[in-house]
Image (cartoon, rainbow, N blue to C red; front, top):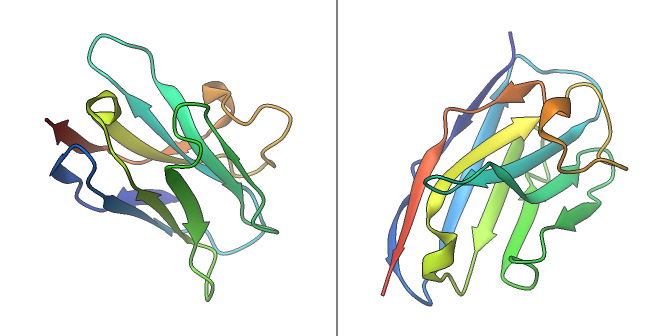
Length: 128
């Protein structure tokens, strides 16, 4: 049984940084698309960034380009990270890790229905 477990989020001030991690277990073969999504109160869940574990190719949502970096553990491709810099209040949301398993990232990188496994979510709060 595949499980995704996100690290604890946190609260930071505008301009600060946070790093989230996601550990996948029960997944020992193949390559796939893993990503980070977020959901703000009263809004639909949206894609933040995705990464193809087979080669490290990435894709970012427009609102986080240049500020967030998605990466995977170089020793094992079952740990996913999201480095978030220059945070602003619009980044406040519940963040979720997800994996397609199977499937690559393209052409539908942010298609929620294609992600079979989801973490429980972790709250990130940015205050001014």
